[in-house]
Image 1 (cartoon, rainbow, N blue to C red):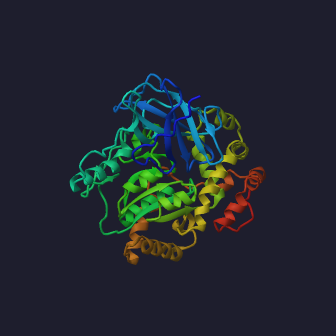
Image 2: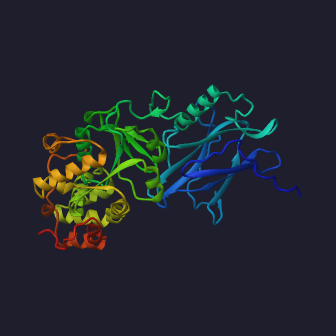
Image 3: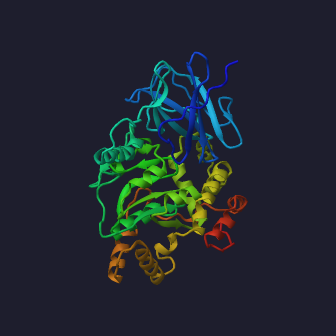
Length: 438
């Protein structure tokens, strides 16, 4: 019996924040089936992932395109080191390889575009001439300084190949998400927020301070691209969704700009944002839960779960049912994001920003924030920034602050406590145990 062939490794290292290629081999005697191996480095445990290819440089799908739907299916062979291998039939041709993600409760269906996939590499399969070679291998070319510079530029733009995501080019020929910036500010910033804690209020604040929004709402594996949209354009939020991971996005933001996102804490995410000023925005969780509920009753009202909730006449009973159905996943997300409060971040409390604790604390918070961002401000500047920020219409502002007591009762409070709301509030500095008056 013929010995198994050794893994054929690509000419250049192919790796990103999620996976690293280990190599390839033909898994049948006719060399019609290719088996490839890769090391999983950083896949969120609540996500499924799949690995697939498209053929041709234009991104069109091959007739034999395929998907493997989850790490636990029989399509994978996996050992204790998270080394994964899978195989399928591949005719001769050029292929682009991608990794994609979806949450566990989503159906594993993806449109035939590369917008929802993260590019891994480009390879050529041709068993008659060269079994497996990396199609980007330029090792035979001369290595002049100009040529090296072209390769550097190419490497920076290559990850965005085929994506519906316009890029700008800096004076040093580097990719940028947005060309405008404030050159007087030497830092770039990210707003990391608990949902409905004042994300876009904080964004408006930074804009009025003088930092330029890059127009991106980011997460670990995707983003929402608002660079070219106004409020009236956003009837369909799917139009702005792009599967572009944080490690790619964070590299195309300039000093003097900021981005926003509800990013769960992880060491990997922290490392990706080491050169950012990180502003953690939070709010009493009873208020954020009520505001989230209000938003979801609009955004999700067509789903069967939300229809069952809206069929309940009593507002507090609706709220209780909402937490029964969505509470577990909602509080898990909050818990993951709240861990940023224990890291090296600037803590921006919604209530302080709104002036709930008095003008003196509000202005003191503003002064500290400006110092953290590297801007100079006077008391008059702070008053002017606040007057242009508080009450301003933003992407998600509903027009008025939620009144918790309108939605709360003893049953809602029991769900809040059961789901860990009291402990998370304490982590954020809200030590009050008493519930709102029902």
